[in-house]
Length: 129
Image (cartoon, rainbow, N blue to C red; front, side, top):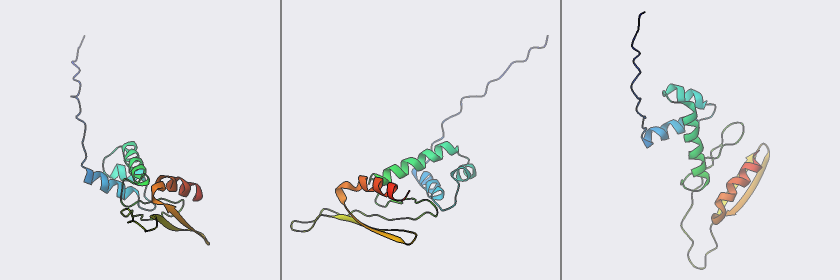
């Protein structure tokens, strides 16, 4: 009886990716018409990890943790930069976010208090469905 010794592969080390690399991959995924799976495959990554990176990026952007936010709309991707300024001085009106949302031939003008920026994201998601 012939006995062969089975050699198990060594334990693989967890790969670590720099924030710069992740940012480049996420930016590539946010381009119009680009498949997250294709970007992942091209970079030798698991598509589920890349989807998670994009999801976290979008959540942070909508929560106001990023200075600029990109909101995706169904169909072609529309980027809406939103920049938050410092608090107004005494006697000045409260800060608000002003948006013109165009969908087809309809334009909706919105003014939203900066303190409620999180709920603005929810409102936009519902409006743009």
